[in-house]
Length: 248
Image (cartoon, rainbow, N blue to C red; front, side, top):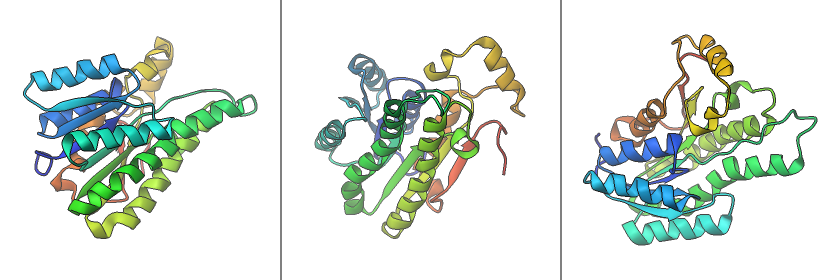
């Protein structure tokens, strides 16, 4: 894909699901990939898979709820690859509960992991992108950040916040040829959704015009497009990957 080959991408939450798919697709397109997450074993396996296919990847243990680990991880990735061209803020958690019963700790945990970490990662890679006057920042938000979801006030708020962050950063950095966009997945088959029952998944599919839940590869393809030269005139945009679950 034009503009991706030879670039360096950093992907958070890369050990599984959407993050893992993003790392694989970007590597297949020719990018060098810094894969980051808490699970070192899974990261090493992913990096080995990419390297085994002729790509180039390195694993960096990073708990994005920790500002210190984000700073150390990004610094180590830049030391390894020399720069960061593409940032994919994918790491996320859920702590579901009705708002009247939600514990403050669960609210804080989700906002810290899903939203504050994205701001911190953007802050850490911006200098590298400014130096080369080229950059792609892609935040993984959610359809529930656009339409809300009962029992997920913390998650929906964090993902809606990512959309606002995306637009603000797009305005700040656009003059330096750095784009910032968001991808909003709908119902995607990932380890996060595996815990839901079959009946719930079947009912969810009925609400999707395309009649199926999505795959991590569906989301990764959108991320790869936004990272490419083909998307050079797109910034501050939210690309919906939801099978028609939310339109407009």
